[in-house]
Image (cartoon, rainbow, N blue to C red; front, side, top):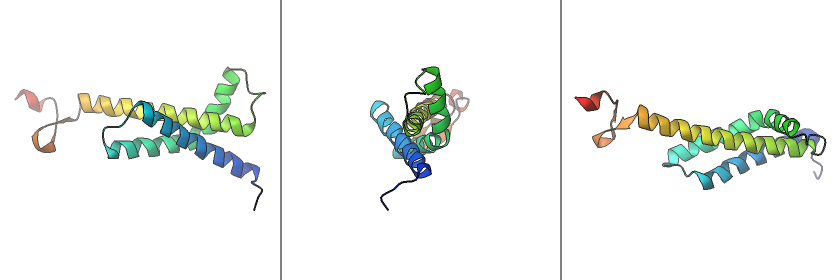
Length: 118
């Protein structure tokens, strides 16, 4: 089996772009815990696979390079972009939730900010 059909190539490009986007993001914003790393990595890969084609086409049209890129390159670029975007969005959401809603008290118990004033 030396030939890869076009649908297989697109899926391979989606997965490769999504994994690459999450891996690159790991170098820039390291997660605090293993659970956070796994959650953000899986969310980034899933988002890259789901939104890779749409994001790639949108960026290629916006930059006026759609006629220069192949379908595989467009999908690869879009999957990586979607993965990076989701990785950063998840990081910001987790940091925001930690700061404003899920403050951790003694013993690792989650408390609300209202409980601390008592």
